[in-house]
Picture 1 (cartoon, rainbow, N blue to C red):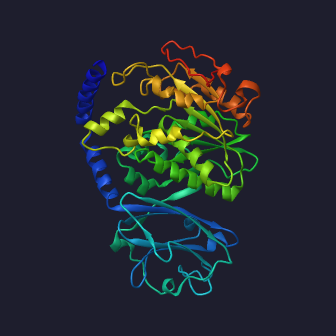
Picture 2: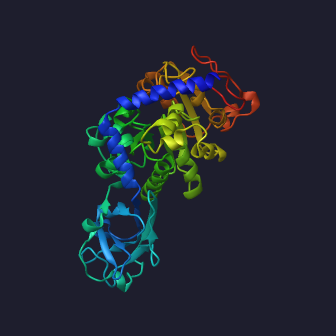
Picture 3: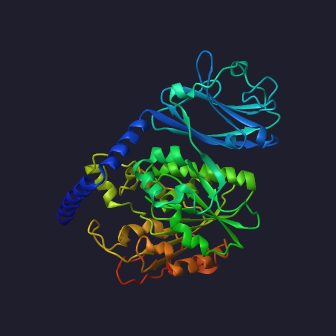
Length: 456
């Protein structure tokens, strides 16, 4: 009965909050969702073997009679691609060695196709990821694709967006700020159109440095990692950031990220990397690692460090699904008991990946029953299934946001970063046996860790 009354109170408060939210924000979200209902996305990368990058080309065709060229990329822009396309149509991608520089595949030019001959049929809201392997030994394009013709994208409502792995940037990058983080929740399609989705580098790739990939949470943005990244040991580690619109479905974000990691692993050949993720970013990271275990020839991730992640979901996401006039897509995955969360823990955690789970416990929130860090309940952060897969668990007297700027968190992370291998003894396995159980002692939380977990 108390829970029912509490949900009624929260529901009333939520409606008041939504009523006070900027009307333009809600309207823009609805417009974005309406567009999602009429479009799909085709994204991916061209993997080159012995074709010069500056001579690589990519053409998107809509299947018709005759075939219609609707988008074209060249050089570095062709290495990664993203297109928003109308639903219910079929498309073909052609990556080719553009020897004569005319922007289309000609007879005798090596060409690799995706979607030929039946075409990629796009449904509303669907995202297709395509990996195209192009070499000088690839065959020439079919005659239907060698016909001359101008671009027809504008009339057909087709547009390209940045989808990239390894673009260099600095802290002045326009998509790194709070405004972009907000846009990523409430106008995710606008975010994609303006900023794209991708992994940024802060320096050229160095094979003698371990990559550390940072993933922000819901409404987050790369600038939040600035103090952490600045304090890192830059002689041993190279920081990367994954920038994505956090309002889209979490599985979609993870699908995109594993494709980008695969491309980087192909280009640079690294075998070890670390992921650091905050809040909802931890859910994206866990799904990415599970996908990498299935799809990549070698699992590149050796350590996952998560901060204040809502492993059990978030009550407000569930209430938003019930009460909000317009629903942010990621709420469907964040609602406790969602299909996404259930499958996230139904899969076996890879033994080769050490998960260091950090949680925060300072703060109160009238919207959340029980103890929290001001944004996420401690019970969600310490979901038993997440504990069972963790190599270490440690709590901090920090809020949901201040944990990102904690010197103690940074120092502890640097100690863990020093080795990508697990320790000996009790800590030498990802799931600890009963005898390795230790307790967490905090001022605000009485949650008891389940057997098979450990803290430090």
